[in-house]
Structures are given as C-alpha cells and as structure tokens.
Length: 107
Image (tube, rainbow, N blue to C red; front, side, top):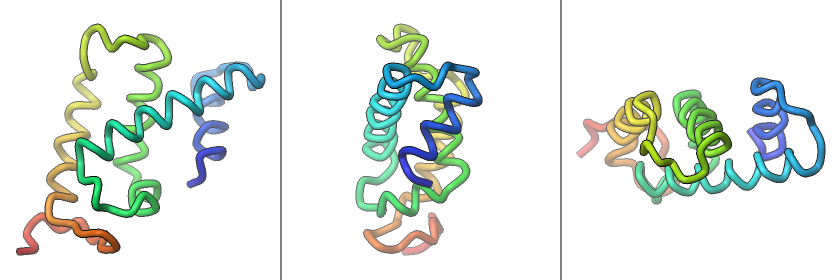
C-alpha cells in the first residue's frame, strides 16, 4: 500500500473532507506514526513488508487516528495500539532486513 493509498483510505474511514490541508495533515501524522511503530517493532524489516501486513496497517490506522485527535498522546498509546504493537514485536522479533516471514521461532 502506498502512502497516498493509505491517506485516501483513512480520510474516507474517518469521514474527513479530502482537502489539501487535511490530506497533508493525515499524511504527515501517518509518517510520524509509521516511524514510531517501525522503531518500536524492528527497524531492520523492509518497509514494504510492513505496508503489506494487515496487522501493521491496523496499528498504523489506530495510531494515526489517535495522533489526529490527540497530537500530544496525553494518554499514551491506546490499549488497541499497545496490543497490536506487542503482536507485531513478537512477529518480527528475529526478522532480518529483506526477510519478512515474521517467525519469532527462527533462531
């Protein structure tokens, strides 16, 4: 999924007007959320693998939405984001760059 596809989909899901300012805001918040998630999960995994992972996209949706409504994350990550983050960390714990099987049992 491309950044533009993600932004368009999230604008629709949140029932937001697709105007330049809102699109730019959602796109920037998505990039921030993605950087946080990738850093917290495993920065050695290729971004394409993450952007094709439904669980990652769900976490990215949730965190981008949370940032849209609460830019300071005053209440920290939502429980849903925390739950998905733990699952993603387990899935990608031993994944090296270019390898996206997500098998935490690989040793």
